[in-house]
Structures are given as C-alpha cells and as structure tokens.
Length: 114
Image 1 (tube, rainbow, N blue to C red):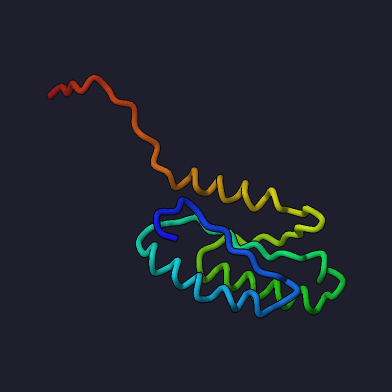
Image 2 (cartoon, rainbow, N blue to C red):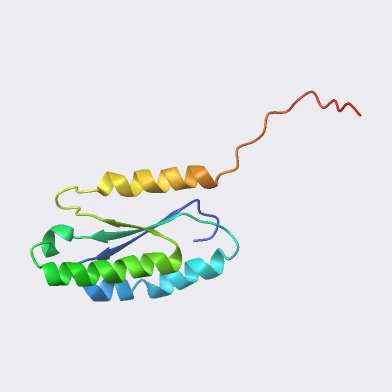
C-alpha cells in the first residue's frame, strides 16, 4: 500500500462483515500513508442483491458512508453483475489521483530582474 497513487477498497453490501473485515486494511493504509493525501474509493458492491430490501440497503449504506468518511474515501455503490457504476469507481479514482499530482511548472529563462 505504500507508494501507490490511489486505492480501491471493495466490500459486499450483501455481507456487512465484509465491510468490517476491511478495517485492518484501512488502518494499514492510514499508517503507511501518514501525511500523504492518497485518493481512496470505497466501493460497495452487490447493490443489485440488496436493493429490494430497503432496510438492509439503508443500514449498509449508512455504515459504508460513515466508514468512507472516517478514512477520507469516496463512497460508490456498484454492481459487478449489472455493471452499475463500475466505471465510476475508476474514473473517480483517476480524477482524484490527477488532482493530487503536482504539475511541473514551466521553466522560464531563469533571468531575474532586480
């Protein structure tokens, strides 16, 4: 996780424990990248499996959003089965990576007039 430009963490909306199982990886990321702004996306996958259960969807969404906020991540709900928002995960990550990269300034002639 060190020296990475960005990270994507994925958990199953169908299995709340999968979000909890990411905790050691979140902590490792925070420790290894202390002082660096590393773009992170938290992808909540299998939305298609829980969207018919409003209570379960609301519960896991709330927990996922709270965890994303804790680690400074973008929260995106996806479905690999339907392809819903999969591209958004990568586009969001790349957009944030580009924002954090320092653009080199154009070199001038080097002349300074005093």
